[in-house]
Length: 244
Image (cartoon, rainbow, N blue to C red; front, side, top):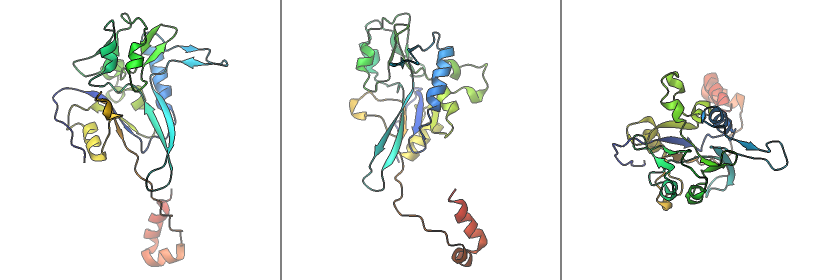
């Protein structure tokens, strides 16, 4: 079990379960949709249907095939957005102060009216989480849907980031990682949640839950007669349902 440091400081962030993310990109689509309508200025796309399309996305999903030390190869879908680091290098290098970290909840934001689009924050971010909106000429990034999570006009169930609300697999969780008793902190502790590239010392708030190793042992073939004789009909039905 991972020991979490005791903190009285609010640290809002995401916990992403790599074991159950199916790579459907629903989080990418919902993020793009919500923030295009509500970011203030739309997230632009350049030549979206042409030969060389590009666009501004605040959340992306990368897929990798990995070979564990034991067990078969696995495909891992890896969602990535701003990690709202405690020691955020993007904030440190910003020459105008446009990039800043909020004291009240730890969310890293960009004041677009002060951003000059120099790209220093993108170079400093080791996670590739900054996006230059070419149409607007400013840097944009995940805001944890700050316009949703504090919006009392929304039903409470909707006061979470759009990506969390949309994820069909339940792989994304949102909450206060500064509170060791919060649901997200307990989830990190129970599942051994990890920082992304902790050796960099950025202390990201967002955590990843590692994928569980898959069992290499082949499943025992179903034998209805033998199983019914051994366990009774109810036991055999339980085994059958486990296959689906």
